[in-house]
Image (spheres, rainbow, N blue to C red):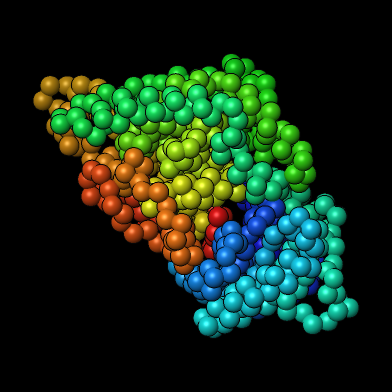
Length: 499
């Protein structure tokens, strides 16, 4: 028997939902993640005598069976080590393999094809002395159990999933305000270029902007060019935020709901989610020219520029920023895909800060796909997964903003400790901690599955970089500071792991 605790964001007592058997486990998965996983392997930790849900990790199913052993070992290690960092090792694990059939393939065929992967996952967990209580394959509207031998409850041809919204889990989640927003593919599509005819004009704009902006960021001997680009980028971003903000009086921009509105309006229907978000994204795309998008994308490759942009993080400002960063990510067309790491990481932070954790994990996961060594995204991803309260990071960023504003205000003559604008004291802590994506090499197609898993879930390590040493900038210090406070939302521990 497995008990899933969903803790409210208010002071109300936590809701307890008892799940009995594979059917209810399969029905609970979208509510655990916040979306319907597609082409995904998900591991969920269980704790205690009653199997309380804990941490979880999610990864796309590797296309090559040769990657399955390393992926299985990496996922098991990451879940167990991550659970240990924030609480205790799991007492058990539940495995989910979710994949739609290929043309001409059946759900049962998918289950049989993935059976060796399921066995690898069970063996990898067993090697860490953690039993797998259940392993399910979900495909074509059916679920199959790799563990239950009783054909009366788990027939070999699969069992239909419960109708959407009819289960006890769905009813309780609705009462608690938990939303399932479409599928993983739907959520990722909002953050990727659409491959439309606009790609070529955007590519030309990016090439032109790169020829001007990148040399100014990298080659100016005194750093004056970098400073000028930073101020111009932030000024342009501020102007665009005003375009993306709702009009005075709170009326929403037609077809462009903010993060909070999306969470309220979207339901568990993937079709409705796609229609609503497609209209919103089309409206947002129309607010941004190719040249403006190119200038912002290139300017955000500077670490300090990106850190200051992260200060747009709450309220109407945060909702407008989230829409802007998503629109920029959609403009990172070939061959500028790696440049998407910055706007994707900012989108992940804005989503997390405004209360949309599933969208935050998706955006941060895509940022790591664009640049696996992007430390800013890795730190935010880990902090979100470990259940840290984003308010700790917000308070640090507010302090940075206030300190910079005070540094620009001349202190009275002779005032002790007055900081000069641009002085070491005013700049302390603002240096970046990782390289800009203009120095990011293309991800190697031969990268092993173990490295993919560890880069997305393991504690951060210092990457190569341009500029000051790693570990000195806000992207590192803010997350470390928040961890030091031990702040967690509602006392929840180990319940938000994986993308």
